[in-house]
Image 1 (tube, helix red, strand yellow):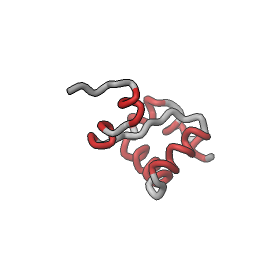
Image 2: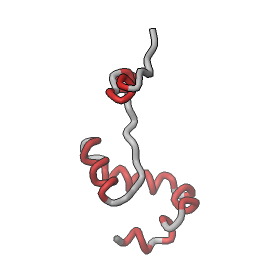
Image 3: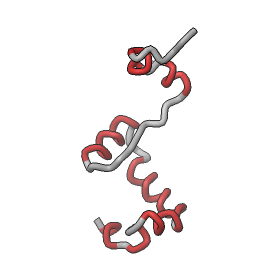
Image 4: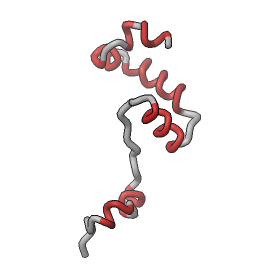
Length: 72
């Protein structure tokens, strides 16, 4: 809650200027969560997010297979 009042985090430009501090805050808030837990909390808060998949996860993604995205 106190971050909402801090001008260092009020705008994207401010967060970008303080990238190291911003990264530390995010890592502190999400670093102990699994990817699923982090995505669940971010989505519940209405924060845009996406999972970063490995190449193997991408190749095995069910939606891409269902849409016939892979060709031999």
